[in-house]
Image (cartoon, rainbow, N blue to C red):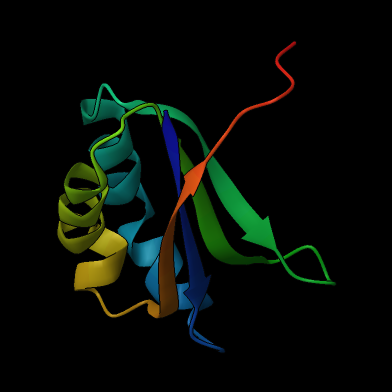
Amino acid sequence: MFHALICTDKPGHLDTRMANREAHLAHLEADPHVVQAGPLLDATGEMSGSLIIFATPDRAHVEAFAAADPYAQAGLFEDVRITAWKRVVER
């Protein structure tokens, strides 16, 4: 089972994202359940959020990851969603 963590940045907070990016990437690398991750982009190609896919049935694990994320602790996100996800196509 998978979970998707979908985060939307607060408008005008690209500086916050960039200031905390290195710590955020280290947080991602430290979690063995993260299988895919990357920034969401707005219409101009600027980073505007995050999408992280976890290979775990444990929603509580994803909630704990999200709470400890340096981006979240810096107040970057306007919205955070966690949803179960079923992979249908794998290449």
